[in-house]
Image (cartoon, rainbow over all chains, first blue to last red; front, side, top):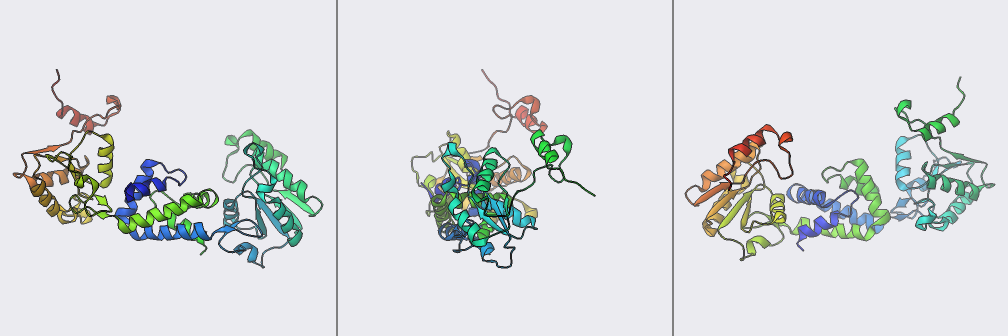
Length: 196
Length: 196
C-alpha cells in the first residue's frame, strides 16, 4: 500500500470520515498544507501518548492532575458530575460555573456491560470525601441512561452532601414552544419557577 | 495550551472541520481509538515527508516514479491529461482506462496567477516526446478554466500526436433529463452518436 493509501485509510478512523472525505483530506494536506500536516502528526502523537485521566476528576489531561482540579481559586463548595470531557468543555465555555467537576466517561448502561465500576464511582466517593462540597450538581444527559446514572450517583452520595441537585431541563433559549417536543415541555412545566 | 487544545486546533487544518467537529474527533481518538490515533500520526508524518510529485507524470507518489508510470504493461499509445491526483484515483477506480496519465495539479487561471509554467507544461511536452502516444485524452473538468486548459494543451501538442480527444460531456448515468442543466443537455445533443 502506498503512503497516500495508508494515509487515506488511517484518516477514516476519524468520526464521520468515509473514503471520499479521507481522500479529499489527504490530497488537501499533500498539495496545500504540508507543514500543518506535520504539525497535526505531532499533535496527535503527543496527545495519544501523554493524555490520560486526571487522578482526581477523571477528565482528560496530560498532567497527573488536570488544570481545573489544580486551580485552588475555584469554588470548593460545588462539584458537578458529567458524562464526558466534552460536557466539561461546553460548561466551561458557557461560563458561570466556578466549581469542580467529576467526569464519569460514560453512563450506566447494563446492556452494554457498563456498570458503576467502569464509571469510577469509587473515585467519585473519594473525591466527595476529600473535597467535602456543599452541593453536588448532576449534569448527566437527559436520556434514560443519563437519568439512571444521575439517580445512582444521588443514592451513592446521599447523606454525605447537604444538597444534591439536577440541572434544569426545559425549553432552550432561542427555542420556540411550538416546536419543542412534549417531553421537554413537560419538564419545563414541572420545573416552573415563581417570578416577581 | 494543553495537548488536547493543541490537537483540536491542529485538526482544523482538515477541510470541512471546524472547532466542534475537531473537538469531537479529538475526544473520539483519546477515549476510544488511541492506537488508531498513533497510526494516523505515523501515516501523516510518512506521507508529508516522503510524498512528492512523480518525475514523469506529476502525480503524487513517495517514489521518484509513480506506480502507474513504472507499470510497463499499460497501454503506451494513450496519455490522459487530468487536473488533479484525485481525478487519477477516480478514473482508476472506474476501470477501463489502461493508458498513462499526466497530472497538471491545477488549471490555467490567469486571475489567480496560475500560468502554463505552474502546470508543468514543459514536463508534459517531454513526456509526450518520450512516450510518443497515438492519442492524448484531455480529461480536465468541464469548467471555464478546465476548457481553457484543455484548449491550451491541445495547441501545445498539436502536430506531435495523431489524435487529440476530449472526454464526452452529457447526461450522467442514472441522471434524469428532466433535472439536467441546460449546458449539460446542450453538450449531450452536440455530442450525440449514431447507434445501430
